[in-house]
Image 1 (cartoon, rainbow, N blue to C red):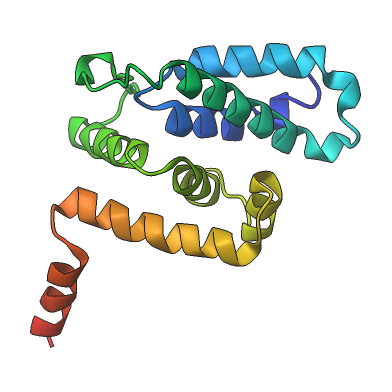
Image 2: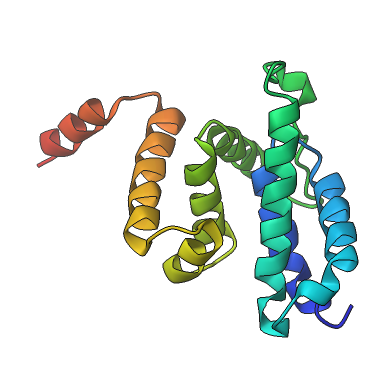
Amino acid sequence: MELYEPVHVRFEKFCKARAYGNFNFKDLMHDALVVAYERFESLKNDGAFLHFLFGIAIRLLANENRKMSTERLSDHTLAYNYSVENDRADKLLEINLLYEAISKLPDLQKESIILFEISGFSIKEIAELQQSSEDAVKQRLVRSRKKLLELMTGKKEEELNNLSYDRR
């Protein structure tokens, strides 16, 4: 518990964003914590506990996605219903739209954008988690931002570029 309490908020944010639309984030957190407890002796550095949890959560989601590959969730009624008390409805709608758009990204792009923008990880830390180069993470972030802009505005990149030139 000493290791978990300081990272709880970051871990919860990661799970909410990463599991959106496919898995209940509380179930993901619970399952990841159970696995972390069972494999705690394999943790070599207490400072890497949050990375340890993220790695477990990512693997659990990958396993779940493999199980569900034949029956993709297309029904939005099964999507996770994000709610925050005392928050305005328009902010909740924007958050839901953003999470829905993030859920449409390819897995590595989704993880990169969540880890960087929502969980506050550095590019170097993300590269270590994803076992890839920093340049690959940067490229995933660029591509995911472009795709999110496209999904959120309904306009293709070329249309957005034309709008920016028209303003000058």
